Length: 421
Image 1 (tube, rainbow, N blue to C red):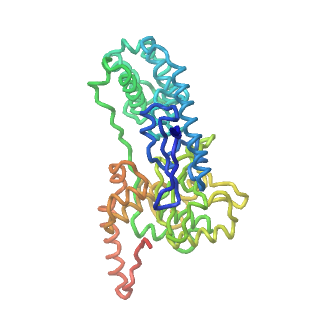
Image 2 (image 1 turned 60 degrees about the vertical axis):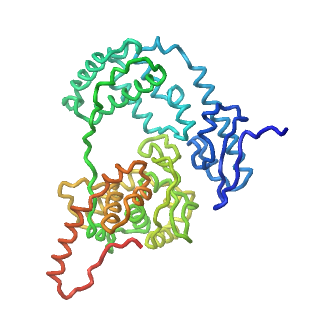
Image 3 (image 1 turned 180 degrees about the vertical axis):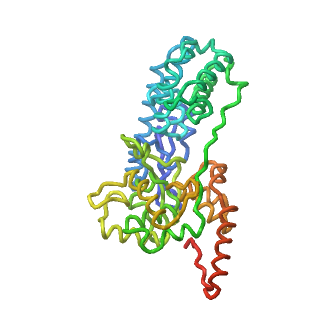
């Protein structure tokens, strides 16, 4: 009887891509094998990103072997770090979550195709070092902590002074710290079924964040007026922001093989994690899923002209020397574009990310389905997409301006409209 292979990598019948299945012959637990049944190579963790687009059978098999070795290594590391949880203090337990090597979520998330986010770990580490590590709350044993201990800590955190002298309570940071601790305690509860979670009767904090505003149709048009965008790079970047809805880090991570000039479409596979910090990581997008974005003829032409001027490099958007876009490039130029176009903010929160809000609202106003907009922007939750829609106020404002223009210029019957090609 032939021994079962540790994996299978059949080619999909409807495409040139491969499918991945890990079998029990790999030595991995059945639960993990079930998580890796008929998966795309795009689901590989960020550490194995070089195996995500196999072109040949041999490359697919190499990726499968690398994944098995990765999962085995993660499980072994977790097993060697096991200590009696009853002896852990609150501080010792929470500190486990600030490093990928010690986080109790690492192996389980890897098995579910949910690679860790370096940005998230950096945030957890900052919360722990700045607001948790030295607090008396951390000295209590996890097996003994009670609801009163949590409320006392929460009160102490809310009264803590920021650098400007104002209390930390009610801020995004304060809410983030509590949400982080709640997550760690929930993980402890999963391992100790009879343990009473002290957060069970406490409501989670509410994050009162201000949403970015969207530019209405007429102001989007102004950005593309002659003289506003002064070189092919500026035109291409602005076009991909407003016509394709890519995030800044996704724009910088885009490679030439992601551009389909025939269909046409843009396949968004990767992003620069920790884009605004040193030590960037080239990994999966925020939603951890590949998605397709619109590749408008305006953008196609702009990219061709940009390549004529700067040359073709490893990434689509590069300077002549081959260096990729830095966060400061878009962040610095975006306000300049608004100023050149004569767009007054009037208290609105208009930032580069507002381009995604603008595109979502323009599409919704033209009857495009909410689900399509969700897929195009790469949102895992429909609630996130709904927060991007500003069409009611924006559309009414736009119509009002067009009526005013029509009244002042009755002879001009050709009112220009923003169009998705």
